[in-house]
Length: 83
Image 1: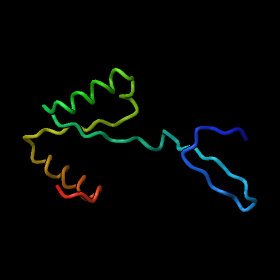
Image 2: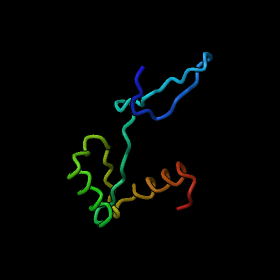
Image 3: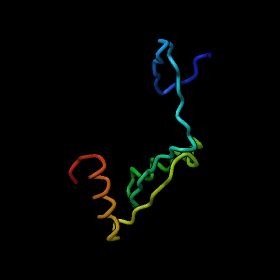
C-alpha cells in the first residue's frame, strides 16, 4: 500500500504500519465570527480567497445578542480556558 498523506498510523500485530486518513465528510470545523470584528473579517476574506468556505461551518455571532454569552461559555468549557 503506497503512503498517502496520513494523519497518523497504527501498528498491527504483524508489525506493519497501517496509514489512516481522516474523512473530511465526517469532520467539518466551525469558525465563530464576531460581527464587526476586524480579525473575523480578515479570516472570512482569507477563507473566501482561498476557496475554503465550503470546508468550514461559519457561525456568526452578534455582539449585542444574549446568545453570545452562551457561545463564549460553551467555547470556554470546550477549551478549558476561562473567559
